[in-house]
Length: 503
Ligand SMILES: [Zn+2]
Image (cartoon, rainbow, N blue to C red; front, side):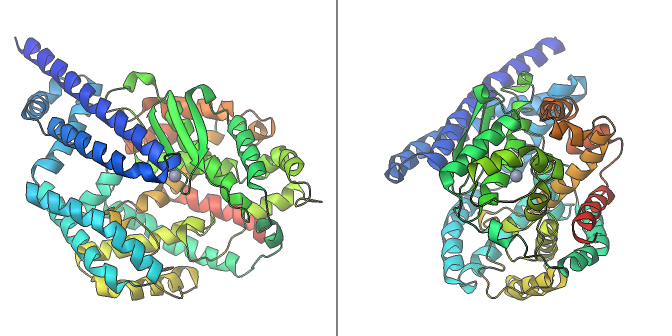
């Protein structure tokens, strides 16, 4: 009898989840369209339609029968098979996050977030932090309150961190960033003191966007992206999009006077896209579809972007193609020149333009600030100055205004607190995965032989195919034989940049 009840509940769960996923599919397609090709004036009608559909979706997600079936299965969690167990745990967690929030608070917060996006855009444009800080204050208060509804006994920042990277807490991030402070910051200072403007002409030269696109198309084939199950377009902010492993799309952008932007955005997004394409289709329609976490996702994009794309072997193999498209700008350019140019390290104000060496220090600064904001150690009034003094401490430079300082990122205005650290974590994961890969593969030879499919296959078997059926911690342990340890990331950066700058 029990078995029959369980089976009925599972059938009901699948049925409702299928409907929810169908709505999500439609929203995803609308999102892709509006971020790539939709004409400006299409926004109005789209907003109306989305309003109608979101109400339907919300009703499904909060329907009593859906809640009952999740809670019913959760009560029998020990008798479920492993995959269903993980799905139900995820569903229960999502449910718990929502059900404890009073509806009027949720509505108020949604409005606040929508408004804050516009307020932030204006504040950034006008270099006017004062006009944004009240919104930021409220966003932090709401997020704290929601975190405490969900887990009253936990540090609210830990709850937020876990939202973006399952299992991560302040304790672990503190350990990670303290290692960077101790070992990486002094090394970065040493490298930056050497300066390097040898390749600035190349870096800022004019490169025809059409030719850039041709090169990105070429890279898409080099990385063995499956064009039958995906495509590449352009957009202002590069991103990867997917509904299933059989429909994975990504974008890059073409800046006339900064060719590296299109190249490395394309390789970065190809990393995300390859992960999604190589997930087993057995997870389609379940809650275990898609990559397992922000951090693991970022580890894949960073792996292809930096460890493959910014390697000497890569440019020994693909510089000829680049030169054939841009003969005038690249006269006499050697693979070693290109390697040095794409690895130019520099203290810069803007996170999204930071190089591989300095990138995680930008993240560390945001982590320090978020941690203190949530604990109440600092108020929104303190942020601009705190931001500037940390920039000076970590990178030795000071923003000339708040637009290039505390106002530069969209995340906080969108209510995303706890998201930033996953960027640095993912980048550090990628180095640990890289050293594990070297035990099985000769990466340099593979890149030189233009056989990246061997790398793709390794990552598929070790990480990609599992979708979200394993946690980030389980994956790291299985792939590398140990828990996450920042020492690999530090070693990787020190080896690479010592070679480029100090030899
Ligand atoms: Zn990314």
